[in-house]
Image 1 (cartoon, rainbow, N blue to C red):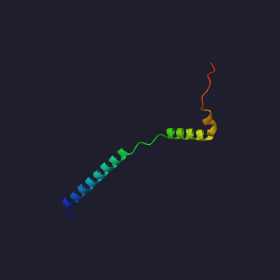
Image 2: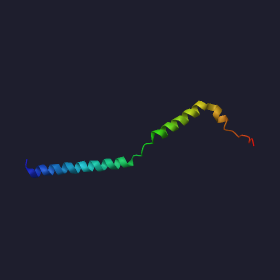
Image 3: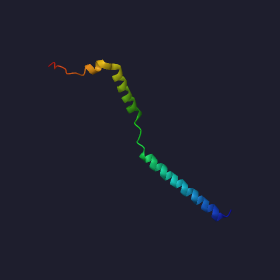
Image 4: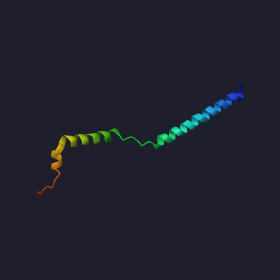
Length: 68
C-alpha cells in the first residue's frame, strides 16, 4: 500500500469520526436535562405523605372558621 492510499484512508476515517461526533452532539442536545436528585426525592416524599394521610387529609381541606 502506498502512502497516498494510506493518507486517503486516514482522511476518510477522520471524516467519518467527525460526522459521528456531530450526530452524537445533536442527539445529546435534544435530550432534556434530568431533574436533580433532591427534586425527585422531594416529589416522592410528597406523594408518600399524601398516600399515608389518606382520606383524612382530603376531608381536612374544607372551609375553616376564623379564630380572631
